[in-house]
Length: 175
Image 1: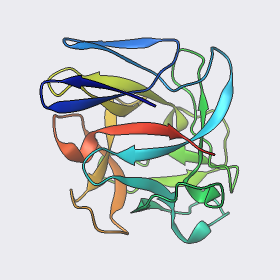
Image 2: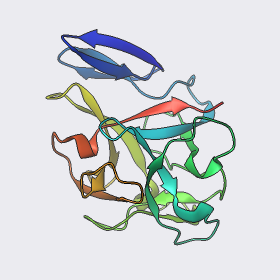
Image 3: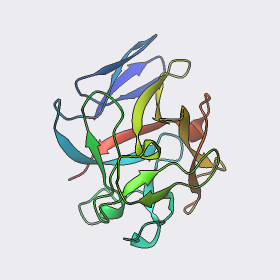
Image 4: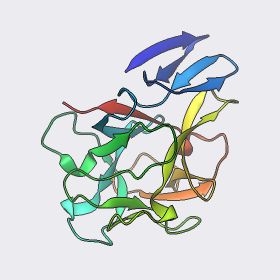
């Protein structure tokens, strides 16, 4: 991950191939070459916590919540595939092999069997007003903390995309 300073705020920049243009520069999608796949932790910019599969669940329907990030190679329930194909793609949990699933507006995300459905499709999108990144669903909603708090166990859901810290994310490569 590369950081670029703009004023007093640091913009997290994910070095990659396809850039997302902001008024202050370019934020790029995850740090893998075109067509490559790797694992990343997905970190909320405000809470500095990760999208986590609760209880290390390996079954369909396991819920996603925020939890302290484990910056090591042992917490595979926080590791998500990044497929840099230039468009929307599923985010697959390394530990379970299941895909992050959008269950509708303000409903908690779950992991489900990966079958290519639209509710599994995600992409990075720019919040140009804040110089930050959203993770946007195929429905045009954004991954958010519901409610916006830094408490472990807070639900990860989708909500209308807006300039709030609950909806700003970045990816970090896993060891």
